[in-house]
Image 1: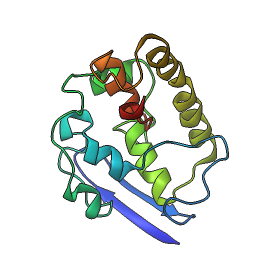
Image 2 (image 1 turned 180 degrees about the vertical axis):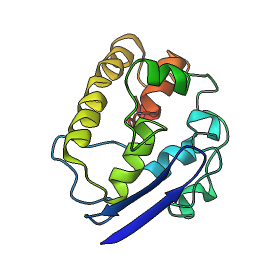
Image 3 (image 1 turned 90 degrees about the vertical axis):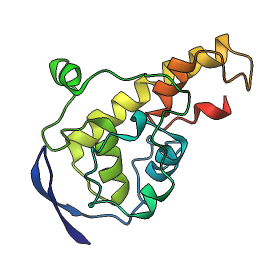
Amino acid sequence: MAKVFVEDNLQKYEYETVELAGKNFDPIFAPDLTPKQMLELGIFNGNYFEGYTDEFPKDWFKNAKDTNYFKVNASQSRQEWQRKGWIYEEDPRGWFQWYCRYYMGRRIREEDARQIKRWKNIRRHVSQIQKYCAPGDLTCRPRQRQAVLHWAYDSTML
């Protein structure tokens, strides 16, 4: 497929894509949103990549929002993510960076399994929104809605 070279403030890294972008996902991994859709809705206050976006398609960022969709902060710091052991050295920015690279066709079997398991575990938050909020009430649990949006669950449709 293609070799990708990354050099930014967090890493100098090379990887190969082995699948077509957006294709051949693990059968249990079915995110509601693509990375581009997530960026257009508004995640991580628009500063997740800190301006280092060259490795991904430019059209992902054309209409990206620089605010969170639900206007609340639903993230912990990268330092906290590291402290909790959630960061894989190949993806120093965390889950969303992993998802973007996975979406583009990179596969790392063990890390993919770990991240997909983490993604599945977020489903409990979707269930809480569905249980405690009236359908379509986007003012109900905005922080939790923003958090699940960060994990490619479309909480704007719950």
